[in-house]
Length: 52
Image (cartoon, rainbow, N blue to C red; front, side):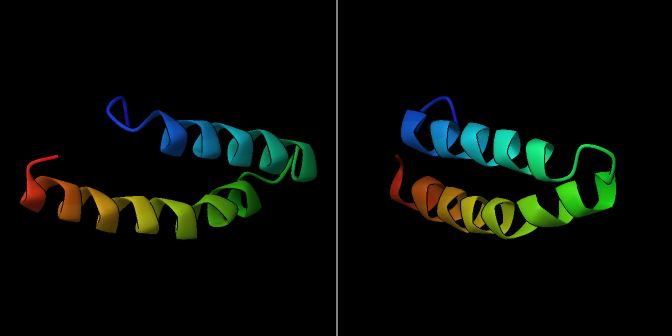
């Protein structure tokens, strides 16, 4: 994510929002990040295959 600061910013904002929504529910916090992380994993695979 260091090479993609926009994605890092989006992830940071998501984590902050989830922390506010679920201050005592770690499972909901983690579940809330799952789709974003899956998306970034897919993009990372594409970035790597393109040499980005």
